[in-house]
Length: 435
Image (cartoon, rainbow, N blue to C red; front, side, top):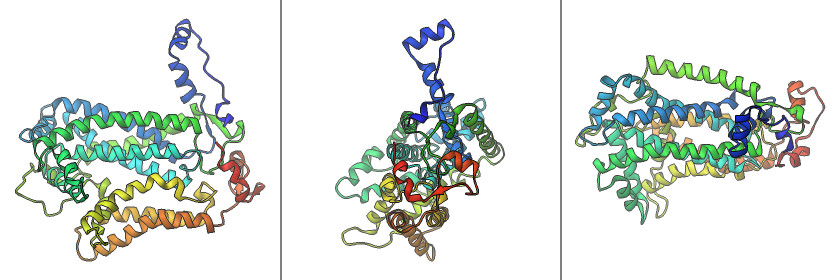
């Protein structure tokens, strides 16, 4: 991948810069990583969400640290402390709305980022570890979001924690032990809130650590691009700044403008009204639902209403829910196609967009009660979710005939209509898997 280091390197100019560079070459690292670093010249706006996610992570950590200064992790005080933040702390309402809506927008950005990876084949060799690190970040995000949802100590906070931790008891041998470890006892109470607060504070810093590894892995292997073809010459790339920086900056402004609209005009739109009622263990809400970004997995959990041998429906639902996340880790080996990008894979493109529509549909089903017609719809959608990874991906790689690939990224940019000389997809199999 020598083409990835062809746009020059850092040269210290002043005495202070030279002194610093000899002892801790941080300016050199920043320059080589975010200024001169070459990126494919055909990146589109779907490639800006990595930068957006970095900004959102920093915003979540900063607002979270300040909110933690005013929050009381005690079941008798938690709900009132959140109200106090909203009413009495200077700009407390803004901090809280930035943080709560920030979680939703963090997940919006990560879902777009993941869909882009699946569409353009960003998980294929030599980028398997890059994809796995991304999946670890996603898993940590889900844990962080769940812990954070419990902290306001509203009705949905309490009952959501009760239901989700209750599912661990279905796991044979260790399930009850895991449940009691999470709860700090036998029910959702003060020790639970303390544990969830401590973990919610800690996990974002763990996410930040894995993000550093994720970016490092990206800079070792280089970025993919919409064609899925590796960089072959200097003409295929442009320096990160100003080309990618300006594109990222524009996308961030648009994304943050939409985020600001939600914060200032409809701050509670993505939340649940029951969470403005203080937690009451004696009063169960009519429909217990998690935050919207967990709804597809909640639907998968409730889709298993039958037993399979020794596995009862409760354990089956838990296995299906965790399996739907675990399967993402194996995507690099489930996709057998030699061609990366869905742009040149007509059948994969069709099944991919059905998969996206199915994921959105699962989210809608997750917000509905598990009764009547909703149950078979959940089961059909859950089947397609797993079939996409376990059946469609492996089979398509064997039977699909891809479209012709351009010879290089430059050719793809200059001849978007495919008028330039191209060669069959099979002929690029060797360069495709090259590091």
